[in-house]
Length: 167
Image (cartoon, rainbow, N blue to C red; front, side, top):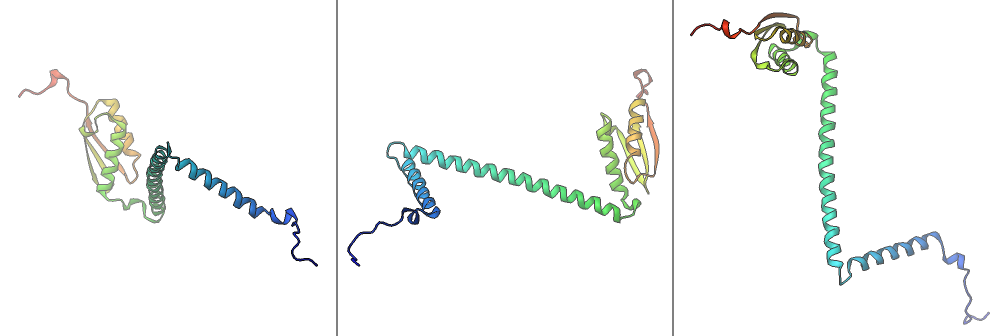
């Protein structure tokens, strides 16, 4: 057998899927290098690519922060809901019930600061002056608050200008 003689290999043994991927990868890397290292406009292209990468990183950090806050708030809400099943119903403090009632009033009537809220053992006292239809809304809002056992309505209608006391 002559060892100096050239014998062509089977082309299928050279061209395997791995070789094709290596070839395409080299082609891609070379194209990107030529695109970015072009002496005429490569600097501008590199700056644009850098700015786009920074912008994408910033947007990612902002969105991940929002997602983290949203997830934390959802977990806190789920924990608070789970603890309501463990705690007895009347265990909320009077200060907490008063804050809940003031919050409910703030969502219901236009001037919630005109109403004073006092709570003793779950019994709520509302004082101040409001028109009758707003007073009814305030009482309904306070009744729906968790922890309220009784409502004492001491809300009076506002005085008309001719009814104002003399000073």
